[in-house]
Image (cartoon, rainbow, N blue to C red; front, side, top):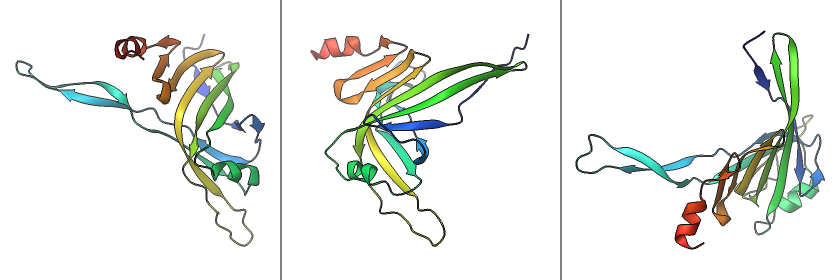
Length: 173
């Protein structure tokens, strides 16, 4: 029995506000979760330590493979939140071949920070990259919640466990 298992995630589809955008995006860069850490040092300690103090801003980038008016209409409005879904198929392999193939779904909500008019070059398809300020992100793999972050509601769940519950209770939220 093989001890090595390899996961591969090589393609995806994007949905915007529930609309299927199959074949329209070339690449999506999902938010990177960065924990803010604050240094603590005090008399009597032989060193300093860092502790969690929040989450850095979340951003998402999408490279579109052409001009899509329905996408640009949404990107042009900085006051309207857009909901994105990136749906993929996560494959697991070992020495015997493919063992499993399960859904991996990222849910993102936010507002577009910019919308390009694009570059046009003779004979080449134009590309358009949009950047989104994200206020909500969630990842589900095979029906299991990996994490959920809602910046505006002070929600941070890991594996379905609300790790900010005590914090919200303590501040009266």
